[in-house]
Length: 356
Image 1 (cartoon, rainbow, N blue to C red):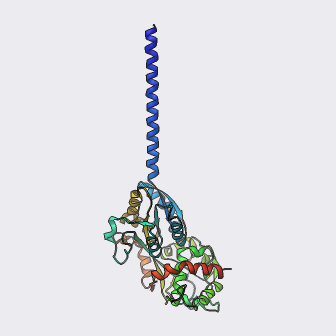
Image 2 (image 1 turned 90 degrees about the horizontal axis):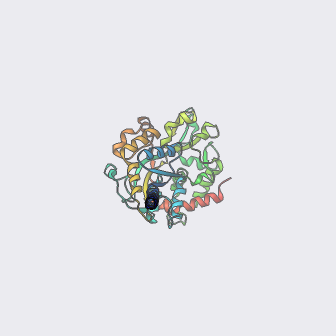
C-alpha cells in the first residue's frame, strides 16, 4: 500500500509539473503572438480620411491583413506633426499630403527609402520622390458655384476676390481651417502672383493688402467635410473644393456644381504615400504602402470616392464625368521650393492679422 501511495503521489507531481511547463509555454506563446500582432499594427497619418474614407480604408486594409490606426489631420498639420515627432516617431505610414509636404519630410530625414512594384506604372513626371515617396492621386483645387448662378455674377479669377470692394459672397477658411492642405494651396495660389524671392517671406509687400481683402470680404468657415456646404446653406455663392468631391456634391449638398475655370490658374496637388523612418522593422509598413498604391486598391478607391489615380493600370476607374468637367482647367505650377520655405510664415502672419 505504501509503495502504491508513493507512486500515486509521484504521478500527481509529474502531472502538475507538466501543467506548469504547458502553461508557461502557452504564456510565452501568447506573449510572442501578442508581440507579433503588435508588429503588424500600422499607425497611419493622413489628411484624406474624411467623408467616410477612413472607415472604408480601415475595413479594406483589414481584408488585406493590415490592422491600421488612422489618424486624421489637416494636410499642413500632418507635416508639422511628423516634423515635431522626428526624434520619437509615432506614425508608420503617411498618406495623402502633397508633393510639397513630402519633399519637406524627405529633406528633414523623416522618410525611409523603399520600393514598390507599381513604380513602373507611374509617369516619370509624377514620380519625383526618389524612392522616399510615391504618387497616388491627382487633385485639382477649383472654385465652384451652384449651376443656377449666372456666370456674370461669378469671378473669372482668384484675384477677383482680393480687391478692396466686396463684390462676391465667397468662402474663406477660419483660424482652424487654415491648417488644411486645400486651404493652404489656395493661399499659395493667390500669393504666387506676388512672388519675390528677395523678400524675407517670399512675396512683395503688395501681397498682404490683397490677402487682407480676401479674408475681410469673405465668409469665414471652418473645415467642413465638403467645401460645398456653405453654398448649400446659402451662406456663400462661391466656394472651392478638391476635384474628387465634385461628383458627390449633388448627393450630399443637393445642388449641381459649376466649375469656375480661373484665368489665373488653379492649384494642383499630387497626393503621395511614404514610410516613416523609425527603429525596428518597417517591412509591414512598406507592404501596406505597396498594397495602397497597387492598381487593384487604387481602382477600388477611385470607384468609391471619385479619385484620379496616377497608376496607369488603375486609370480605367477614373469617372468619365469627372474627366469631362476638368479637361479645360488651367493649372498653376507653384514653385515647390518657394512654397516650402515660406508656407509656415504665411500661415502665421494670416493667423495673427486677418481673422475675425
